[in-house]
Image (cartoon, rainbow, N blue to C red):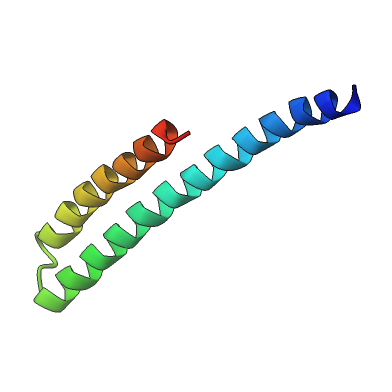
Length: 75
């Protein structure tokens, strides 16, 4: 009887940690993409039109969503 209660309590905790890690992973991917874009824009002298920042931000959002969906579908 107790093992059933423990498994019911572990399941929400496992889900919580899974989704928390996924959120931090998405934030890290997007943050690194924006950081790299800013550094490349500064290096290339594109301060008026931050082309690298915009393109890396969009690419990192797409990558973050891809990895999140891949993790959600994995069972």
